[in-house]
Image 1 (tube, rainbow, N blue to C red):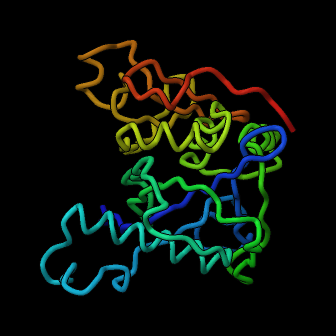
Image 2 (image 1 turned 120 degrees about the vertical axis):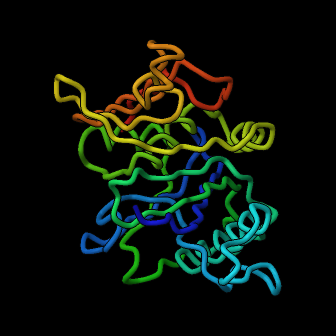
Length: 250
């Protein structure tokens, strides 16, 4: 299993008529990663994102605090490179950490941040060649399009949009993030006896042997067998994620 590369993702929010909107970017169909998918701005953390004296490539890695700061810088840098939007590192609130399973050939340990979008006076200028399109969408609209098969989303994007579909506005979303603790989503793929496919996370009864022993009814999973996907969670005190499905809006 290859070591996961540190990366950063920035979930940009704005308030609009009808509710909260989130910025999504479309990757080219021929892209090496997430081909054709709609994603949040972001990318891998570069050595230059570590300040002087913060990271020695030969010391086995940086401290968690230095990694967090470097990821913030990478998030700001990648957002500017991909969209032309300028931000400050202190505007980013950490939401979660996503780590794919060992089956993924190119693995990234991605820190997800949430931030209010810069002022509307800043136009979006896409990085041509790296991105094809962008859209400000209500989270439930993006989820409904994915469920209808007209928008490609990766599980981390889907679950984040699922949370956002329950937030009335930017202030609500940022308030929940800033008063909570970032959750680590270390993913595992499972298929049951009926051929149904799931992405599982820690706490789910089928995640590992420890989960089955603790509570056989515990659920923290996303069923991806067919569209629409279905998220199920009945554990934990992290109030930002909900098991109920959001309203379908195209």
